[in-house]
Image (tube, rainbow, N blue to C red; front, side, top):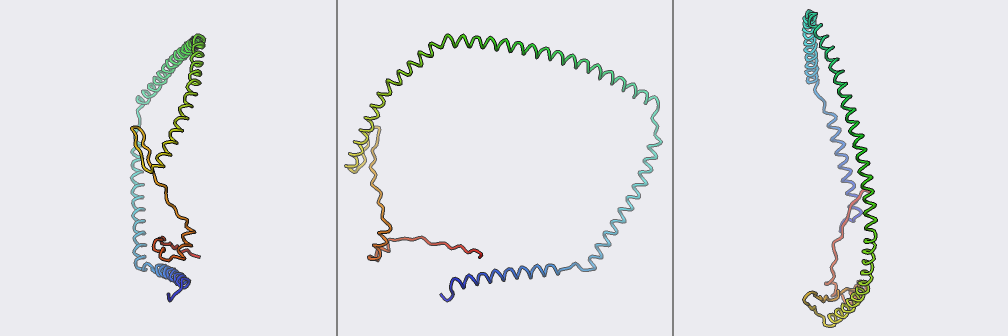
Length: 233
């Protein structure tokens, strides 16, 4: 190699510096780009013309608004209509008061219904609690007998289950020992004893030492490719 890794890293740093300088030069050139004076003049004249148009339209709108206000002021509501409107307001107030009285009656009736529902609910709950207590008293002895019988059954079968479990463990050990001695799988009607050869492993440290004296073993050794990450210092 004509160039060391350190030199290449330094060269890489120089390339990044050149890239930064190019970015600075580009921004400087972009900042130097100006809009021509004649173009700015055209823009300014256009803005002034738009302002003049807006002022002219606002003046026209004010004149039109004044005419509308004059026409509105000339409209007079007849006294007859004013009187009728007042009568309608009085009738509306009377109707609203009558409606309010009806609503109060409805509220009172609903309150009476809720009170009656509460009394009924309380009565039902009291009777249900009484019946529940009566049922529990009558069935307590039966449930106690059932629970006792379940305990007796559990105790009886617990001993039997332990004996069966012991037999299972003993037989499984015998089967495994025989299959291991025969070195082949055996399939029954409901179970399959599968023979799996032991996994072969190698002591890496001892193999590395063995390769030193037997170089031809290097052909059997495989090593993956390393990876390198470049980071800024």
